[in-house]
Length: 584
Image 1: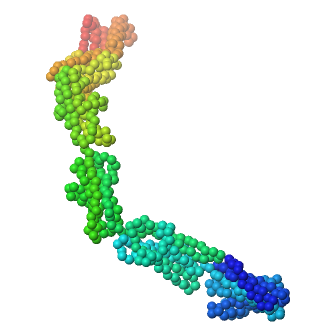
Image 2 (image 1 turned 120 degrees about the vertical axis):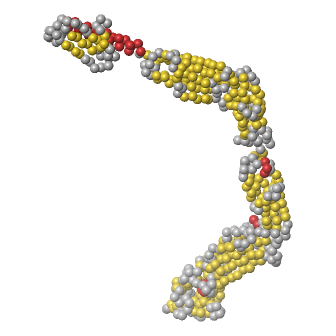
Image 3 (image 1 turned 135 degrees about the vertical axis):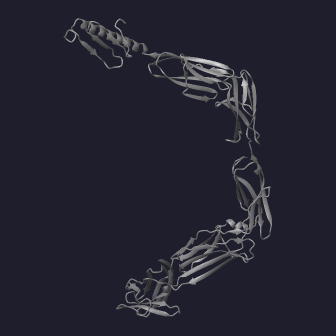
């Protein structure tokens, strides 16, 4: 509640009454209305009455009080909603109206009558307020043409449920919009609700220009509250303005910088106009056209070089505005090596080869062999050819301005000559009996040599594997060691031969032979002892004719047979089962 002090005073005889000009409260609150008075007869025995002024200007009593009683008048709008504080003995009495409504916005009168019939009265106006809801704004959804003859609707602002009536002001870019004939039109409308509250609506129309395309429009709502004025704003809106084009630009959006064959080109077109009736297209010099503001060309070649034009046509006026840009696609042709085919050189011969690639940009050429750079020029010079000269030479042509833009070609060089066996690291081997030994022979030469393996006893060996790497033929054999031997690697072609030998020693071979000889001697001694015992008659403890046969069934055992008749003969059976007389 807000109290506005400015005093209304009236006096009759010796009574003076003072009251506030107005009392301001929100709807639904309590409104205390104070009445201050003085009397020359004193303030203890006065008659006090409260009235309100109806809409028709009549007084309507609502309260009476004297020293003996207090009476609230029945049948009035305030019968159940007023109360009076104080007896008036101190010169002040307060009328309180509860649950204030909009219809309570009336003038209240306090009448004080003295004992000597002196009378005084005062008046206070009760003002009621209701804060409106948040304002809303709605812009037009369709675009507005600059060619419209009459102001076009921009939008509508509305605020509801306020009291007293709120006020709406339109703004453009923080500047208030004022009505102007045939240019700006603001049409307000006010609705009074059944509750007595106000809803206010405002519609803005104006003729637009191209410059309005980026403007922001919003509404400011002001409304009264007890003791002052408050303001709130809507969110801003913008509008779509249609206007013709005056300039067109087209450019390569990607890639940035130089273009090379194989790239994808993205062309963009921009017009400074904004009109639904415009047709925008991009075309090239060959007459190919795309009805779009954006064009993507995949995997371009030098044939895509040329002038690209973007055109904007106004279908209302058929006016055409265009712009263009030039596209150049850089290229690098495949590298050409001369001589084209593989080359055969004789030992000591010389060769000059060239490598070139046609390009729209400056190029750099380098030659490589086995991954190592051997020349930094477009020509390759080979002198005093040897087997080391043979191999594959790769020519690489690059464009320094473009990372990854390169082309390459190869040249195969063969050097004719007799086989040349690369000296092996080891030619002497010592292996255990019956172990496997693996021998390797690396041969250079052209035409490719034929490699054969043999042993010192004339045996031909089959190669385990053969591989040819960068002009070097490698042949490998695997041999089981049963004795000492020598293996030979023989290489030959149309120009000559070459050979290398490997000596293999079998460890443990002499020891085995010695063991076999000792075993044979021991068996011979055993046979002699048995024969001696037989002759003495001490074998098996009996005399006379005796047969003694001893057989041992192993492969290398010796069988001895003795007979006791007059003809004595011993037979020694050898390893192979042959009979040998005793005198042998």
